[in-house]
Amino acid sequence: MPGDTPRLGEFELIAELFAPLAAPGGFGLTDDAAIITPPAGNDIVMTKDMMVSGVHFLPDDPPDLVARKLLRVNLSDLAAMGAAPHGYALGLSLPPEIGDGWLRAFAAGLAADQREFGIALLGGDTTSTPGPLTLSLTALGFVRQGRLLRRSGASPGDVVFVTGTVGDAALGLMALRGAVADPDGFLADRYRLPRPRLAAGAALVGVASAGLDVSDGLVADLGHLCSASGVGAVIEAALVPLSPQARRAIDHRPDLIAVALAGGDDYELVFSIPPDAVGALDRRLSGVGVAATRIGRIVAGKRIRVFDAAGADITPETPGFRHR
Image 1 (spheres, helix red, strand yellow):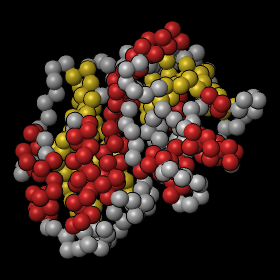
Image 2: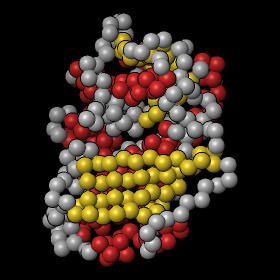
Image 3: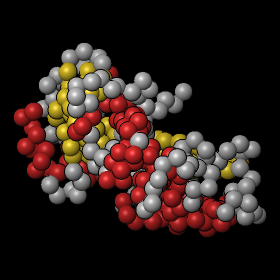
Image 4: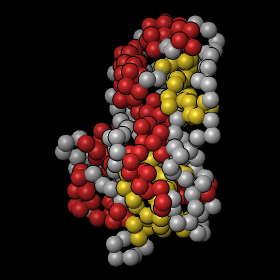
């Protein structure tokens, strides 16, 4: 759809495509700002992510999926802190080739996920740019005061878990570039459309000692948790949960295990649990529709190490995505 110009003017764009998505506190996007009133006894949790065409998504990705990914990566941050979504602000920096058809499909993607996740638009801004399409979203959620799940708090002896399966998105990007077979499109779908673990994140509050979402890669993000907690960790590669599609790819090319361990964009939750709370974790997650798998343990020190089934150290040289 790029190239389907002419494009709506700024005010027509807001009125036609984005005002219908507005939350009550957004006043139909007719004012300069929105209001947010948290429920009694709750804190406001805020997160912000940006996506750039050619860096965080492919230039020919469907615009509705681009919109949903933009929203979902922010929802994943809220999930990682145990927060429930409330609203979001949107920023669009649009190059000339992005026309009305692309924007309508993008807005339709936002509308679909607003319905699915119970979140609505509070405001935002649009600009023009000669550079690549750049998207920004700030999401707001609520969490009970004193119940926020943070990266700090892990202690030696805690057990490390991860939700869902790992490596699908990184392998999906390779599939979209023709480097990995993906006959049923599962891996590509996992790259294009994250599944924010909001119910699982809420269930971890009061049980997990620390947690965050896997955006930069499993090894890198567990490293962020350990850095904030002042500890190290050991991952047992044989325990890392893989989808059947990822397993087939790795069986065909064993070197791809490093991609699964260090590739980003999975948006699963990695977290630590005191050993005596593992039973409570099982009960909490029994009704949320996603499994959590034990993959290792927290240890003293600062290093993150990965061992294979034979006990060999296979820690990736590059643990994950770096933003700079």
